[in-house]
Amino acid sequence: MAKEELLEFEGTVTEVLPDGNFRVRLDNDHQILAYAAGKMKKNRIRTIEGDRVVVEMSPYDLDRGRINFRHKAEGNAPPPGARRQQNFRRR
Image (cartoon, rainbow, N blue to C red):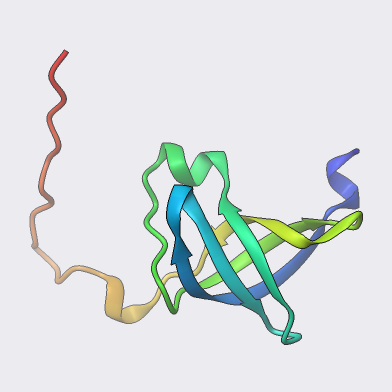
């Protein structure tokens, strides 16, 4: 299936489930099961309950989707000048 055939919807994360799954309520009041896209996992973009997200869905399965984008909220941004904690990995 080509990427042009995917459907995009906006919604709100209502529940965080194990294994990187999320319950998302779409703007048209449908509730689906979604997972984070690979780029979101790679860049460690955290998704929590109440976040506004863009979900891609296949026209063949309208109960599952992929979270493609998380909208930034004003309350989630760190204050200016705040330092980020660095994660060091041992090899």
